[in-house]
Length: 109
Image (cartoon, rainbow, N blue to C red):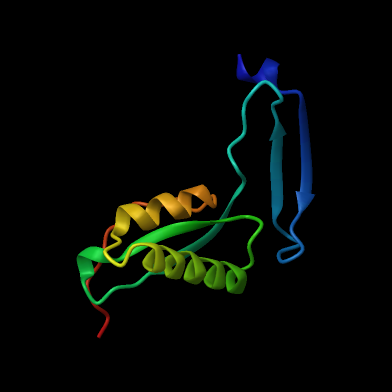
């Protein structure tokens, strides 16, 4: 089973949270997806139905991700002034951003 196929376990601590232990399982027999972080980016819109949420790839810091996504959206708009979410989503996925499903809750104000 899976336990027998695990090739290596490694434990490490996070620099941000030295008390947190991370478990990493190396499985060379599996194709790994691009490493995704726990950082999420909200793509706001005045239209509540157009708000989107994406997971930022692990190799981006928050400020870099913001600038990168801003540039990607601007390039899509320049290429096609009638762009829509599908165009943006395709470009983001090409750059390893992942769309995340979410439920929009009630307004806080």
